Length: 299
Image 1 (cartoon, rainbow, N blue to C red):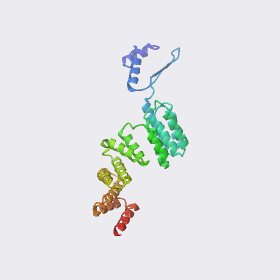
Image 2 (image 1 turned 45 degrees about the horizontal axis):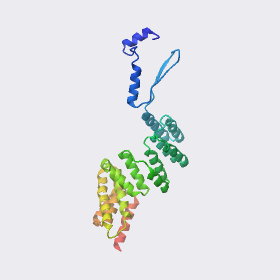
Image 3 (image 1 turned 135 degrees about the vertical axis):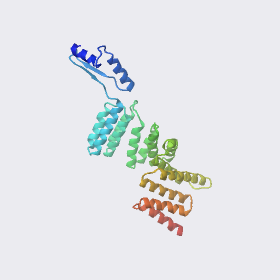
Image 4 (image 1 turned 90 degrees about the vertical axis):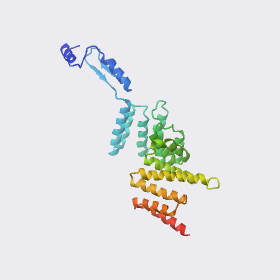
């Protein structure tokens, strides 16, 4: 040691031991944590000694997402994108960073760059959470009503890894008109999401839309009614779960419409529609639907 007095003092304080066992300890702990290798820096004359402990890749990603979200919220959109791109140099295989870059770039109306970023990332065999860029770009296409591009992308999308990711993918499939695939995803994750009002509502609407695609006939009426009955059961669960007046109102309106297709008692249909109107009195579509239904019944 260069200064034995300081060395002895640090040893008495148990801040140093003079045997060098801290270096293998650092290496072992960094490895166990999944962090990059530590970096030891010094010159030939040993005039200094520096240890760099690189941040865990997941922390780099989370920090970058948080910082960029703050920049985006304050209107500094270009800085937000540049911040994500800089972070990606240290976490080059992060699908989450790629997805956020695509989302922000598409929101800036630069779909060419968004597609380029996606293609570059999709060619990376080590990309983590590969489905996230697919979700981000598909959503951007759907927001622009470019349904064919969204469908083509979703058809090649990797399977989601968790229930929340599956929910997002199912909603995108529903928006793109791929109702059978959306229904499959909702059904596969329903156990995990059965207390999520949004998930249950989206699942119910998927069943309603599927029922609407079934052509009425001697052998298909039961299928159509079964889908609508299942949707009705889910919609009543939404009413129980939802804490949002808007979602609850639309659930009641969907109950009214579905009950109408099932030819349930007219009092039940009217009651459901009136509950929707009470929750959202400024929504004209509820009253218009009920008035139209009453006029048709009078004919």
